[in-house]
Each structure stands twice: as structure tokens, then as C-alpha cells.
Image (tube, rainbow, N blue to C red; front, side, top):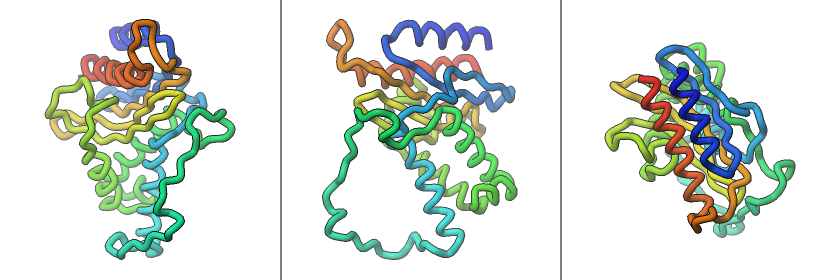
Length: 215
């Protein structure tokens, strides 16, 4: 754990932006965190909770995943919220909230009681994890991991920074649950590298440090 703490400090000190994270070490039942309860723009990581809300509607009988979807004309054009607005004007979350939610989802896949606490069944928890595991893009959490690594995550993006929340597995078991939120990311670094490129790489470096230390 000391090696991981040092590696994470080195990563934080090597970038100009704010780096917040929550790490759940599933093999040793330990937590490593940095400003993990600080509010951050959720961006698309909030789609994890949106998905679980939809699956709860399935469980309650209010939604049928096999039913055809009818789009209203007004929804055919994407409506975007400017992603550089103040935190009090956007949807926020914390790194700790995301890792707790994902950890509960893992527990709900294995046991009925955690699934009930989410308003789901074990099968629906399994469906949610499999959905998160179908990510094709390998930036953020999986970007520096061996190519055949199993992971389940959802990333987000905005002018404020990049963020990612997910679970990394090895030999069929979860090694760690990770939420990383970067903020105050400059548009470009001194060498001209786009800030978002650096932020995504920062998330990948944090994940790799966990991979190396927690197996």
C-alpha cells in the first residue's frame, strides 16, 4: 500500500490539474482516497445511476426493455448543457459516491440483499455490470492495462476535465473499484499537449498504479 500511495502522489504532482480519486482494494478490503468526498462534475459517469434507475423501473414493472422506443420530435436533436458552467449549475457527484455505488452493484450480483437495497434483482445487477463491461473505447481506466483485462466502467468528459468510474477484474474476480475525477484541467499544457489528453492519461496512470500494487 505504501508503494501505491507514493505512486499516486507522484502522479498528482506531475500534472497541473486537480486529481480526486476513490480506490476500493477488493482483495485486501482497503480504501485509498484523495478528496474523494469533494463534489465534481459528474458528466457522463452519472449514466451509471441513470441505468440503475431504469433497471429499477424494469423491476417495478414500469419499463419493458424489449418495448419499442418512440422518440418525440423535440428529442431528435441533441440538447447539451455547457460543460464549463459552475458546479452549482451542473449535476455533481463524488468519487466516493461512484465507487460505493459500483461496489454495491458488485455485491448485488452475488447476494440478494444488496440487490434489493438497489431496488434490483441479482440478474439485473449482472445485466448492469455486463452492460458496463461492453465498453469499446479503451481510454481512461483501461488505457494502460493489459489488453485482455476485463473491466466495467463509464467515463465522462467536459471542459473542466475528464472522469471515469469502474471496476477492474483479474481471473474473474474484482481487484479494485476506482473513481477518478480531474478538474481545473488547462486547455493545453506548456508543451502544447491538449489538457484533456493529459487528463485521460492521468486516469490511466492512476489505474495502472492500482493494477501494479493491488494484485
